[in-house]
View 1 (cartoon, chains in turn green, cyan):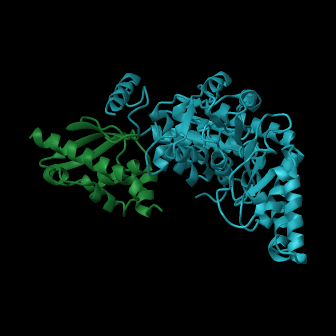
View 2 (cartoon, helix red, strand yellow):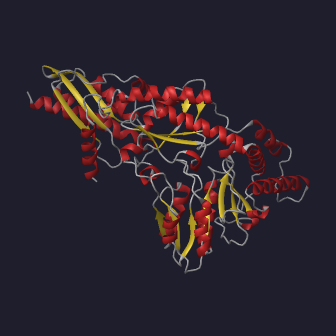
View 3 (cartoon, chains in turn brown, yellow):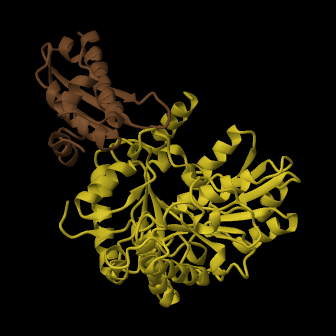
Length: 123
Length: 408
């Protein structure tokens, strides 16, 4: 029911943990009712590109997998590109997600857009 | 998933044991008649169903004619609630249940609300108990039926059916109990306990899926909820599930044989797991401890992490459990049981139910406890919420949850 990519990211999530001396830190949380998923995202830039993303979270398997996939796909994107990433992009990186995990990919994408916008504003 | 499975999801369903399977097989292959048929094969099937009915009724202290076979405990609940409502006079349009019932009770109640019945959903205390005084206050001259589960399916609370039933009896109100979790785990004698309708099934006691039963006290009138031929005292049409009934009776025979000794051992398994898991920081038990809890049930909240993620990691390590997390479902709505006993939504999300049967061992408990500790540590290592981890204080987390709550 979950893709191999989803399971790989869930079981061995990449780039977890706090980042020392990040260029930006943002918190996002799921805005709908019932779910308490929350992401704290850390970003380091290299010129106009994302150099590295780290994150801490509270979330289900979907949010863990989505953050891991998002952190990988963000690396090397320009700030403009990162600020335009959508949930669908994260879902694609996971090989697709079931409907009930849509909130996870949307939240991970929102975290990236939020931190990318902050980096852009600081430019 | 690991090759070796530690199955701690026995409140969901139990494995069918070999003697039950062996008892059932001839009723698929040799004695395959329809009990309604008048030839030899039909008579053999009818006799098998009658014997199964008498045996199961006996374990409840009931007469055989008071036991109606159904397809499940869910169907039995529907027959009890909708069936009683179908026979109700226009002056009896009020029903009472609690906020921690199974959806197989709550949803028939909701259906009746749509057709004009009034339903009172009783509060429970922090351990999940219904106060008989609250029940007494809820009853009116219009109350038709009260439905309260014996053993709660999520947190294991064992209601005092004697006291609750006595309140119903005082007011002449029908009392139904959804009892698949407690049947064959704790004694229930309808000769002693003032209960009029009891729902049970086979698959919670190492019997087959697809068969349940409703005890209907003599004199209680129900309207059937399906139309067809007049099987099961004209209350449940459809050809009887003969192998299922035989398997149900055999499973009950085995379960009741050593019930006290088995459940003493199972409650020791439960307590050992609870004690081991409470060694993990920021962890608490949901529901009561001791004899007022199902021997088969432990429900634990692991704060700051998601039950669904715990469940999936445990599954990959060969441990099967259930979660009160909404993330296991489509709606994202947390368990009605956990929120009714006062858990914050975010804590309900971090809850795991471990449920046991007599087939489980102390070695499994110890192995599972170690795996749970490993998984909780892993998931908390990436969360921003645990106090003293990642420099986040409990205060910050509380502020977030408060803010989140205010959004709704």
